[in-house]
Image (cartoon, rainbow, N blue to C red):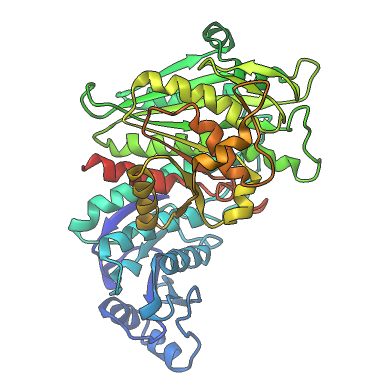
Length: 488
């Protein structure tokens, strides 16, 4: 869906549908009054008859004489309205249209006078939420005879001053859709080689992007033995994908994003239970997230240098698979005792994080669906941020608040480090049940001791359920963080 900004009012709009917002006090602003006239006072009549109360997410569709649809959507109590409310209202309004023949929409939710949300942010949230609501998975389904879901464009009501914000939102929305599309693909399609091909397409699309691919032989030569140990059980050979975007002077140190790319995770020899194992196609959502963030940055042409690194591997059981009890030497030279082959994400990430430091990053951030313990701790609401730095995690949390793609910081105190100590190697790859997300972060921290690094566990936010699938989170948070960095 193409998203643009426009100041065209309802009586001049040529869109097939209009979205008009109301608080529960049901007052009509100038936009709603104009829409009311267009509808021959239908809005005021429906409000009077209490057919529409303005509760958060409530919708009512009316029709003008011309056949133009007008969707009324509620935002609840004006005094309690926040970014989440605005997200919900946009989602519900668009969902009311996606199964209709409507192709073009004018969205007037940013025209409302919010207490704590300025018009530019309202437009940005509206654009991202609307795009998210109209997404549907199509890659392996036949929709040739399906004429529904025809939304093609949306005009967000925004001033010229806010137009640049809408452009940012469009890029973020495209990045989120990239992430969802990759995350939802089945593992027989989306394997390491497929991710490498997607990276090639991105490098071709943008002039200031370049791609480096490390195949299995190159990684063997470099002795990336932790990553290669995970890959041994699969017939799909691993790839290390390195995409570089140059938007600033080459002398400027890059931001480096590393995304866990386990394209399918059986658990290896430490085999997962069969129930819901199909959801392990989402174990590459860290990779999908950095793909989405990279695409958004390239579309915006942010004045930063950005490097995306994806270790892409499949974790399978096989006669050559790595075993519990093995000791492997990572790319850094540090040794790891494998106690659980299902703790494979940190094994591939430690080599990728070590490799990333060769680019001398000003910031290094990894994103991974790393631990089920994170879902226990934070549910599906917040991503987990861990870092030994002071400012970096705060900057990430603030970006999440600004774009309503929120995260929460978990401690990474040295007290937890002893849980991954072992007599047989420099460390073991699991730290036991207690504080499982944190001890996974502790493991990664041992490979990032001299760098401005943060780890983001997205196990609870990257996908919701089998119906919705990949959420595209936390692309918005990451891109907002990079936008903020670009203006420092």
